[in-house]
Image 1 (tube, rainbow, N blue to C red):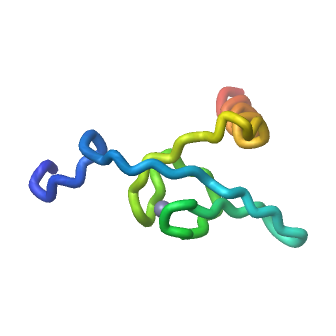
Image 2 (tube, rainbow, N blue to C red; image 1 turned 90 degrees about the horizontal axis):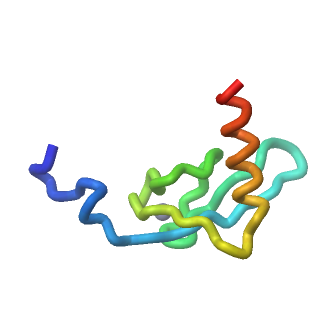
Length: 74
Ligand SMILES: [Zn+2]
């Protein structure tokens, strides 16, 4: 599927999630680039297809990923 030229290897856009905590309901993740809001912190933004990189000063994001990993690992 290289016809449209939008495969991941030539995608140089990067972004990261702003986590939004909600009192009633699960947290949401807002893309800094396109401001799309999603329920899960995907590695590629589903809307603008930017590659999502974690903020180095944001350990909460990393901790949540490791928790999810350990659940699936069980
Ligand atoms: Zn986006």
